[in-house]
Length: 323
Image (tube, rainbow, N blue to C red; front, side):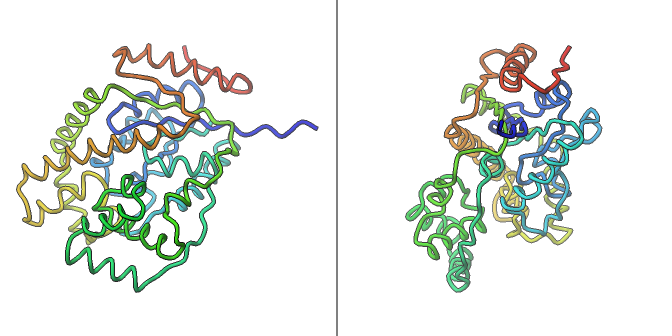
């Protein structure tokens, strides 16, 4: 008996500002695909500029999923993403379309591609409360430093201001005796899907220049006002949504704790560091085929290279409709 073929899944990853959105639209049109956002913060309503959401009128009629599906006061976890993604992949396939994950949140994307199992690591509420008090008294950096001592891999992945996830990683270490990164590393690396994973990259200096241009563009588009509006709606500073890049850096300025120039400097610095962490995360995913989109500035030449990778992987059963 022939084994049941795995359903195909197309994935496009890469660091912030590398140009995933532009390529994703052409790829989705050519391969009859629907896009699933692989960004952990695009799920939140009212967070458009800072998460670089593509406006609906620019989506060319291509369905985009997992965008604007949560209130910013609500938490959202990798397990939530995985469950919703599984459902969407099955639904998209049932309509004869190709599921296409596009995004840069490494753990979220990887959890779907390799069907991670999320165990109940237990809880230690007194310890969690103690860490929260430490963060309030000495700053998030003090708690992040504790994580760096027991789980340097998780500390490298998580920003100090992502206090909720930093505290949770410490709590997992306390309750299980093992670092969270070790639990994740032990996950199986087989996929329930026929994966075609493409990663976009470019020279680090060029990427960082694009990062700074993107930050300037977001500020010109009204990022500061967007953060003000979220606060006006009652979204607390410690909410998961407010730990997103572009939001947490502006909060001290809006609270009168630093100058505008300092907030912008920190935002650009943190975005560069975030791009570096993204690349580090994706580099250990051995199934990714990398395309250096900075080596050639010709969009169509790079697009042709990506099409060739997909055609080589999905050589049966899918219609390639690129002119």
